[in-house]
Amino acid sequence: QVQLVESGGGLVQTGGSLRLSCAASGRTFSSVAMGWFRQAPGLEREFVGSISRSFGSIRYADSVKGRFTISRDNAKSTVYLQMNSLKPEDTAVYYCAASPNVGVLWRTYEYDYWGQGTQVTVSS
Image 1 (spheres, rainbow, N blue to C red):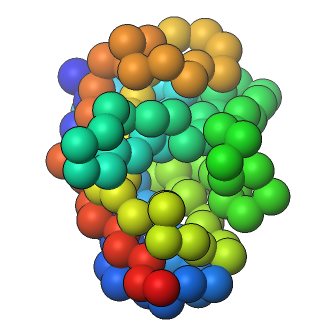
Image 2 (tube, helix red, strand yellow; image 1 turned 30 degrees about the vertical axis):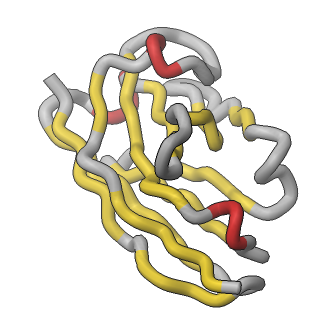
């Protein structure tokens, strides 16, 4: 079992920045791949970025490339999502997820554990 707790969401103006954190517990952090997803009202949950459990391989959705950065600190059992140049269309509930599977995972069904989500609102 892995427990995940997100933090760092909030209200920001267009062009602003936020850093989301996701603290994990219950399993050796370096043994899980981590991902960030988001879900806007009325829409399906979509992939944002992920980082593998080893070697730190990273993948991003096209919509956030060049603006968002995912990183992990295995000593702190935490994964981060630095979000810059935010746009109104980035408004959503952001979820972190964990998976024991190998690779850079980007599909929701590849993840076994999910946090409760944190709201990000970008005003225009």
